[in-house]
Image 1 (cartoon, rainbow, N blue to C red):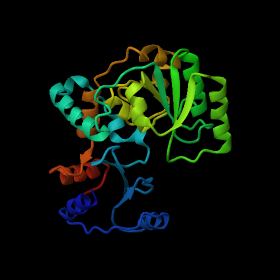
Image 2: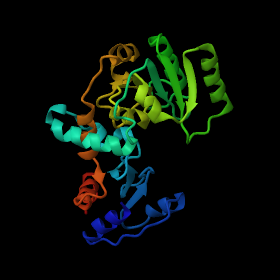
Image 3: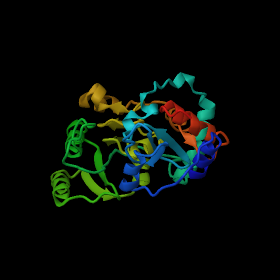
Length: 280
């Protein structure tokens, strides 16, 4: 992607320099005359934008915010009727095979709720409708029968207080188990996903598994959003929720991200920069 970015802006007459992604360099960028493209950082001044992978390589996004729920695609209206179903299914089958190595080929539903966790388990943040621990309690309350697998994030370091809270829930509820990793295996057997805004829910769409979302995110369009319909309605609807997963994935990723190895990637880079206000 870096090569594509360099070429795209050089063709528009710009000199492109790569700087170390550090706080010092980002602060310095505010005093420079040119534009700045940060990697997964808040574009805090009016000539800065944010570059972030669109979940799966080689797809990327260029945005004027670091919050994924405010990305351009998050604000777009999704209409499944505008998507060619055959093209979408063909695309999704290709990427399903590539991303999950056959594990998503024949998913089942075996009475499991998958709850992929992220960080700050005891805190309700501004973009969330409940803290992660309270979200888990909501699953226990609204789904009294299914087994519940809590997935710890491999990249997080959980505090003793957070682990104690999970252990308390685990000890008090024989239906609950806690595991580290194993996302693909659980997506293959779960009935549905409940999460704040973990990308595991997006991966679950490749397995044709519905998701209840307790937080804002860019892939909210076909999820059951607690902020919109409430907790009770989300759980009431989830068993029968069958959106067109492949059509949505095709729209969200292929049609609304920059594919770095596509022949039109450089044009898409410039288009995204202009959409965000750069005069290039």
